[in-house]
Image (cartoon, rainbow, N blue to C red; front, side, top):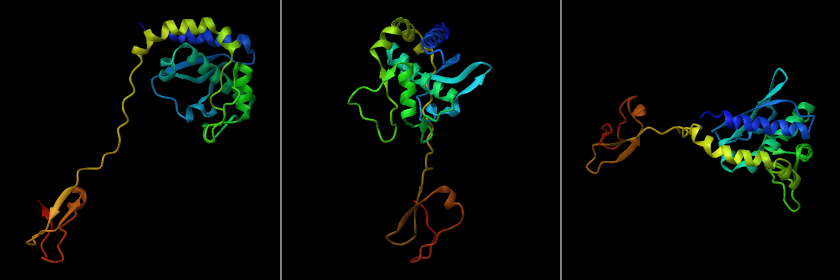
Length: 207
């Protein structure tokens, strides 16, 4: 099995979104195994391939949360696309902070900001949720995704753990004193030349 059934389900969802929000353009949704980042929400990721908007990504992390979370993420994406087509700046701080322009667009596509929920200082209105009406309107899409996602998730590649820079092992060196003094140094620095002890006047060497 390929990921095509999931992509087809996402395409069908976007088509249903356009039925509800005619201002939305055609789009090609993608799936990724990488977790979302702040840059993921900046307009710089969006582009056009003819009449089709690209750069809309649904992450495996979202898919794991199920059909409803996936629909909510697609509506979130739709709000960004709507702002992008209008030339509106809906995010700041390189895509992290979602302002009121974004929230207005989110409400237009079927999301809302629940009473009592407080915007955060770093992300603003980044987490609007499905309205009851949207949950009902896209009920069949949610059901279809809940059936397809468990079959497709195992096919997505597991992102490799980031390779962190590791400090090279340090050498422990000691001098020739009766009670030798010790110091640590990287092999690269040690190779530059001898380091002499100020007391016994002998070089520090590997212990």
